[in-house]
Amino acid sequence: LLGSGYIIHDIRKLKQTKTYHRLLLGLSISDVLDSVAWFMTTWPIPADVLPIYGASGTRQTCEAQGFFAQSSVSSVLYNGSLAIYFYLVIAKGWSQTKLDRSKIEVPMHAIAILWGLLTSSVSLGL
Image 1 (cartoon, one colour):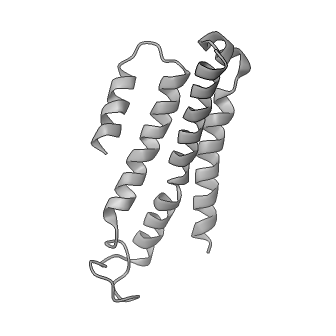
Image 2: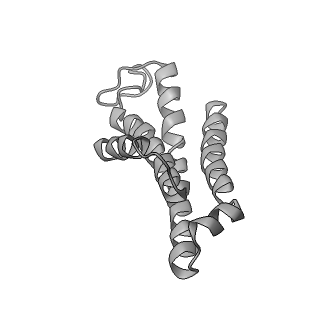
């Protein structure tokens, strides 16, 4: 949580960002949300549903935690995006200009964010 917070703060101070910075920013924001959800552990679970230690929430808090916990798939997808970025830059020798021309960054963000939101939203209906 602190590491991701520092990365967010550090990248926001940059006057100009590159693909790497923007992907890392997306990962860090996702990680902060995930960390808060996982930190809560059993607190949001309703106490009257199951005898679980620390359970003191309501159905709404449980669903909110489930939403944010499921959205952690965005962090996984951002990690995959960074892996693709490093492959293109290191193995294929792509420059920032070539990355910008390829427009590969837009689908990387879109997939990570939209898949996380989609699966989280669907889980609310279950």
